[in-house]
Amino acid sequence: MPTLWNRSASNRNKSLVLFSLMIVFVMVIGYFFGILLGGLEFGIVGLIIAFFFALIWAFVSYFYSSKFALAIARAKPADEKQFLKLHNLVEGLSIAAGIPKPKVYVMEDKAINAFATGRNPQTGVVCVTTGALEKLDRLELEGVIAHELSHIKNKDILLMTLTAVMIGVIVLLSELMIRFTFFSKSNNRDSGRLGIILLVIGIILAILAPIIAALIQLAISRKREFLADADGALLSRYPNGLANALLKIEAENRPVAAATSNTAHMYFANPLKKGFFSGLFMTHPPIAERVAALKNIKVEQVEREMQGTGKA
Image 1 (spheres, one colour):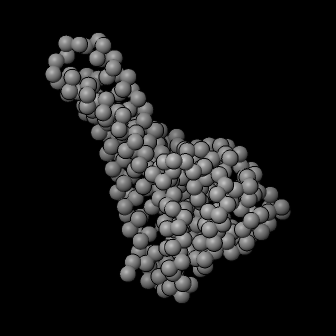
Image 2 (cartoon, rainbow, N blue to C red):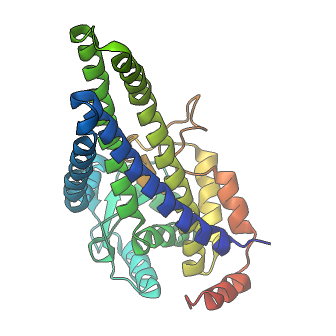
Image 3 (cartoon, rainbow, N blue to C red):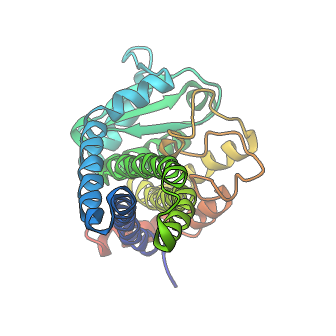
């Protein structure tokens, strides 16, 4: 019978595979775009340009994504005297996780939620809503923070930032392809059968590429949440705290005002208002699935899994 940890270990490997597919996807679009621009001999040129463009974009995001995320959330540093209990929880769990204590931020919002950012444990940031501080008890808040620290320890934020970069590159290339194919149609009417085929393929690929890329991003995000739940349970030694926090979020069903579709994947639970297609495009697994996985393990089992995986 698969355990929560085994499931999460599988998710880690699948996430890396999905991210690799995203990179290949970017290069394929660049290759095809190169063909549309200058013929078959320009395919490799387009592939190389797309790859380096994604690399530069990733470099910028790597160093500045945390500042952007905190600015969008309108988060402020948590005063250590005013939020002493929060600082103590973060510090204690950081010691248990074996990582430096991250910077602690608070965002004014009545919703129960939190997020982590930072390209590595040395630059980590944990941000908690005032709603979470007011409505969660100590064990529930500890579970949420343990979950977010697991994201930092596992470098999930880096993976998701780079994935978002790939999404941006794919969307940009797709838009350029659509513009170029329509331009070439009006200015190269005698391009022949090959030109028509390339035009049709280009339009189809340009339309479908952002959708496919977004679905890959969502698949990666959901898998990382399962992994962070597992590691958070191992870190806090109390899976029910994390599960109960999730149940409170589900019962409240309150979106985070400052959250956007670009930052939704960073949060502890889906921060956006549920819509008609919310099930298909959710950045997080259904809360019921997360709670069921957490409820299936006991404290003793967590400790055995820690010893068995060398994490004790």
